Length: 311
Ligand code: PEP
Ligand code: MG
Image (cartoon, rainbow, N blue to C red; front, side, top):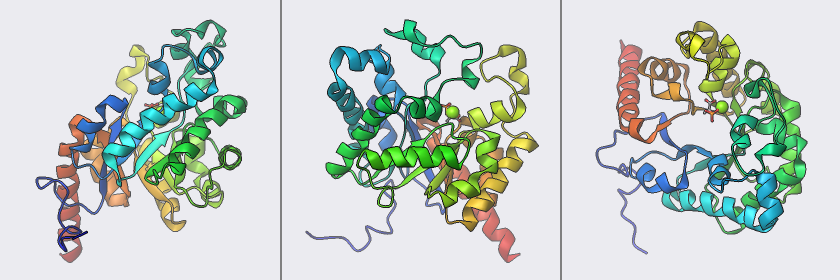
């Protein structure tokens, strides 16, 4: 097969500026994969698994009961495969299930969900997965099948972890499912202050990347419910407390060779972009419609940094 020697240096999308910081895209439903891929994004920074389940209108438990584990696994394989195909060989970071109980309650089987006073502080993300290892095993089996099919561009991300203990437990289950954590790229979302403060221990537990989920990190750092209109004007992703947690996490990760990223909504805000690029974040992931603007803003900030360094 003939290769053009310029292929490596040519941008995939001619109007896309070349940036040192990678600019990725968030994909919420597999159907959006093509639209996401043609933005020229450097990969998918966040692909949420829950929409593949929620679209069946059943809770995972009900789906598995009615259709069997194999169909459940294939539902997830299909969804991820659609996106991984569109982006191959660009990386696709897939986040394991993270839906709060109030979202699951709307679905068939939702009557079995625990009733929670505050679902945002409740049974969701990695906590639910670690407490229901049988269900989680099926999700991890989907990853194993994808790797067996040759999708080496798929990465695994665990949501709502607090510390190295969560990470080690998740890593063990990954291994039990037949995925070799040494061979695959896997990491965590930084969404709680504890996870930001414990990132060094998580690095020692073997994570390859840490991605800021600023929607939740802001909510938990400021104690401002992201779904509560009464305090909506206090939801500030650029609050100095949030920025300090992010900046210090980036620095610790750099010292440990851990890749850093953002996949929360704040990643498309110019002030956040400036802060992150200055701090040396590895990648920024934005919604499909925002990718182009983020690419240009990152380029602008990088050029400014370069000018400042020679001045
Ligand atoms: C976040 O918390 O910033 C995030 C990207 O996850 P979600 O919005 O799905 O909670
Ligand atoms: Mg989140």
